[in-house]
Image (cartoon, rainbow, N blue to C red; front, side):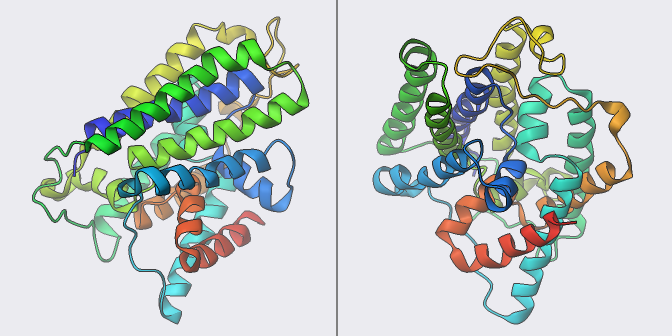
Length: 329
């Protein structure tokens, strides 16, 4: 169902995590590279973020379990395992060669006004839209309580949890980090964990971690009764504030291949993508298409895939094994 309050508050947490990592640690919150890096090349730059992402399940499970997605049945036959593995391969190969996914290109890239990310987002979103409506096999799932565009509002307990998480996140990002933490490796590691925690909470609260909700966003093309417009609010409350924050913090100074007169709060240098539209080749385009196919088939991208792996290990084993295989070539 359409969840305007859940998604708006969750999107603001996505903004807190991604913009916080940029302006405090000087890095882009690209989940696909963080996931593959934490598995293949673990370091203090990626493992704490993934640890924070995973640990976001704990407070939600303990205080607002209704926000945990109801996932489809895990693979229970050789054919379903093979299909799930194949989608993982598509996602892994696509994000590696397309140089990003919904977080790196759509949330972070568009907010930094990156033409390259705009092209990637247009390719994988269009591919996902076509795939979900015309190739998805079982199709986009309907809602049990009527048309999916009917609004559903949070319970008192859910609203209290979501509001509390957003308030604590804001206090941490805007007051505690600048005034308490120093520019050091230890501080960057600590905030990397906190950024991952904020982002994971944002995924769970907004509905981005729910594959059915993602697929229903694509349904306007063929069956409007199944259309859930919630994820459009990610643009308004996730990308919008990120863009405003970026533009108000001298983007020209921090986007010139990492050279700047300013510095991140906790780091000495900016670590931003330096590739441009001129660097786009056939692998970039093919990668964006492959990721779009995976996203449209199952409604899952790398960040939500990590959360689902913890909550549904059988699915995670098949998907993430495929992801790593796809990421190796």
